[in-house]
Length: 113
Length: 113
Image (cartoon, rainbow over all chains, first blue to last red; front, side, top):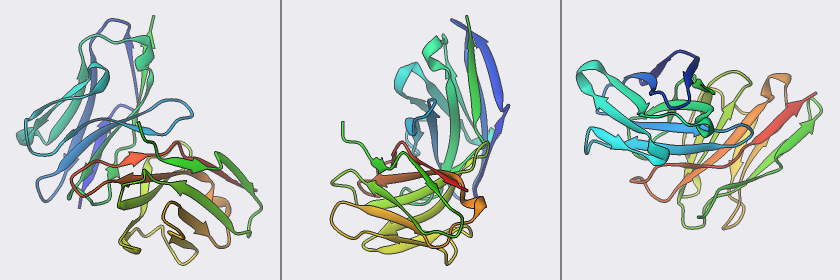
């Protein structure tokens, strides 16, 4: 069965500092992995996706994530945090491209001035 | 950019009443999904729909739930007799085909009194 674990329900970083949001997955087949962002009172917006091509995936708003099979991880990073990055971030996994998406519990990112 | 639109944004209903949540997927999309997010919890898969039939449903999607694509544009979720625990944010999603990620709407907040 697929599952996703996000370490840290809340993460705070200073503006301009590195953002690192951790995600570990479990899947019985090579997974499709996603990061979604949810701004307050809005829906889920796709940040980036991994579909077995390059292991380093670049997304929107300067975010990127690296698929590490040996560590079953798909951590999300951004070199320099911006105030507008404050939101909830969800890591997600799917076994097939058109399959249901299994979401992690989410990590709320706070940006400190 | 085309969007998935959901109406209403907030629905308040008495317990035991029927409720219909509406979604207009992106026009050329073929795969449709409903997810829900209970306050403070993770996003959970409810049902997927393709070629006018349910592809997969979760344990949450019991006999009280049904989905329908009544015409070429709408995709609805009906809860026949609402319970207090149905209070949640409900997200509709669609994808153009099995090779593309799912696009989410902004959600409908359902409050059961």
